[in-house]
Length: 149
Image (cartoon, rainbow, N blue to C red; front, side, top):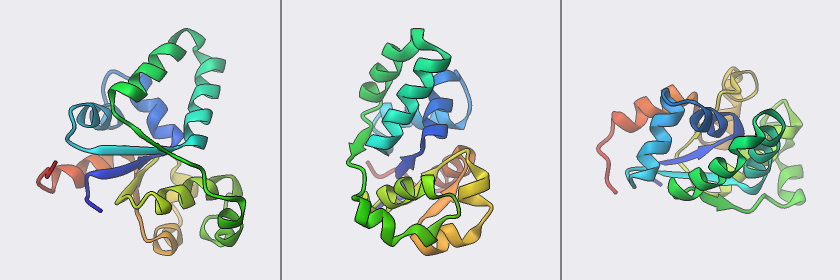
């Protein structure tokens, strides 16, 4: 796995799609240009589409086009058994499938704006074996390493 392999949760993906600037957007553009690889799970796509359909339905088609343009890899959600085995990884049970999907996708890091559940508790990164940071953190990690794609 490379520092250029990043998993986006729904908060990071939505931020990158609705903003014309910021770290999430910069990471999406790097992915679009083939400089990094972004991975999401089926659950992330469903959450993004559900939130966009509720808050800004006119851009739902754009969201789908952005996923294609940025060459985002979509992985299957982990099995219920895999999720059950890792309930101790994070305090918020709804986030367990995201964390397990990222581990199974063998990415370097997770980009999230959900600091409360993913970042504030250092055990989450320790138990999952992943670096977890805000999109700004992740962009810094990517910039600190030569891009090898």
